[in-house]
Amino acid sequence: MADAAQSRKWVMRGVFALLCLTLIFAQLLPLETTPRRWAGPDFLVVLTFVWSVRQPDYTPTWLVALMFLLADFLLLRPPGLAAAIMVLTVEAQRNRAFRLREATFAYEWLTAAAFMLLIAVGYRVIGAVMLLPQPSLGLMLMQVIMNIAVYPVIVVLSHFLFGIRRTHAQDGGLGAN
Image 1 (cartoon, one colour):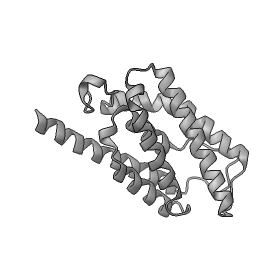
Image 2 (tube, rainbow, N blue to C red):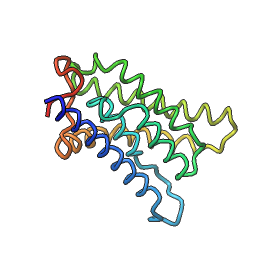
Image 3 (cartoon, rainbow, N blue to C red):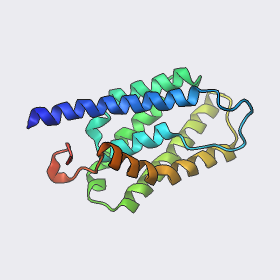
Image 4 (cartoon, one colour):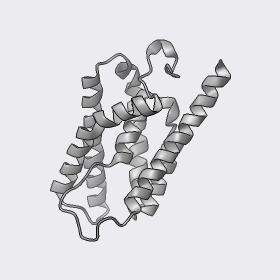
């Protein structure tokens, strides 16, 4: 029984890594040749939030750091900045995970929204201190709103496609199948 849970954990970590690599690859595709006037959601951030809240064992810190560092390099962002911010927020979420396990979905969504807003503000402040080129404030806010709006969709897709359900206190962190 423990071996099955352990092997499922490693399989789901591989699935998470594969999904992250697919999202990074999709962002690299040259689908538009003109600059966009709107910002879509950052599915990599939303996916990481959903999986780290609902099944923290599937998103270990080293895997989140690796995926976001790879995304930083491939998407020509400041190396390590998004990775560091995401690791800090995922760890902060893990510290709150016990409260989120028994909370309603609305509370989980509100908490994720607050963290997504903190990520955007932190990225913008650190970028300003380091004198990095910044996207417009409107685009940043649009992306945060899109992230918050798409969160329930990713929760439903993760639940039905991959069986990512919220862990409960009696599960011991491994979650139900």
